[in-house]
Image 1 (tube, rainbow, N blue to C red):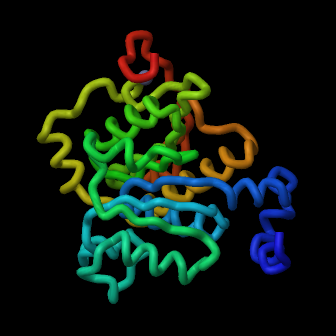
Image 2 (cartoon, helix red, strand yellow; image 1 turned 180 degrees about the vertical axis):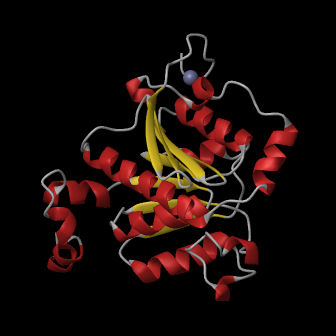
Amino acid sequence: MESVELERYARHILLKEIGGSGQIKISNTKITMIGVGGLGSVALYYLVASGVGKIKIVDEDIVSLSNLQRQILFKDSDLGKKKVLAARKNLLELNPNVEICVVDESFSMNNSSKIIAGSDLILDGTDNFETKALICREAYRHRIPSVYGGLSQWEGQVCIFDPNLSSVCFDCIYPNKPNQDVEENCADLGIIGPTVGVIGSLMAGETIKWITSSGKPLVDQILTYDCLQGDFQKFQVEKRKDCPVCS
Ligand SMILES: [Zn+2]
C-alpha cells in the first residue's frame, strides 16, 4: 500500500478487525449499488470514502428538487442532471482513487444479469417492492449476497441476504406484494431525512463488515430503527420452507 493510502485509510487500518489486509480487501471489492437515492447517497459516500475499489451505480432518474431533502450526495447545482453522472462526479471529488462505472438504466429482468454479473456484493437502495424482490431473486440466482435497506416515514430496516450462507431472503420476509394502494401511499406519505442517513450508514457498515469478515453480519436478522421513538430493535427472521427463491 502506498504511503498516501496508508494515511488516507489510517483510522481503518488501526482497527484490529480491518488492519492493512482488510483495507486491501476493501480496495479489491466490486460492489453494485442499485438505486442512487437517499440510501445510495449515504451508503456510497461512506463506501467511497472507505476506499471500496470498484463501484457500479445504477439509476435512470434525474435529480429533482424534492430529492435534496434527503439525497445528500446531490447539490442544488445538480438539479436536472442525470443522477448517476452527478453521483460519480461528486463521489470522485471525495475520493479519486476509486473506479465508478455508471449504468443509466433502471434495474429490470432485461438487464439484471448484465448489471450484477461479476459483483462481489449488491446494495439495494431502491424504493419499490417489485424491484427489491427482483434484486434479491437475481442475486440468489447469481449466488451474490445483497444488503437490503427499507424505509417508511420515520422508520427504516436493514439486513443481508446471503445465498452462500443459505440465509433468509426478501421473499421469505415479504412473500406477498402489498396491494397497489398501500404501495402508492408509502411513496406519498413522506420520509424523514435523518432516518435515511441512519439506514444508509448501517448498509455501508454491513458492507465493510462483510468485506473484512468482521463481527456478526445481519444475516437471518433484521435491524429496525424508529426515529420517532428513538428505538433500535433486532428481530430473528425465519426461512420459509417453500420459499421459491432461497429454498
Ligand atoms: Zn427465501
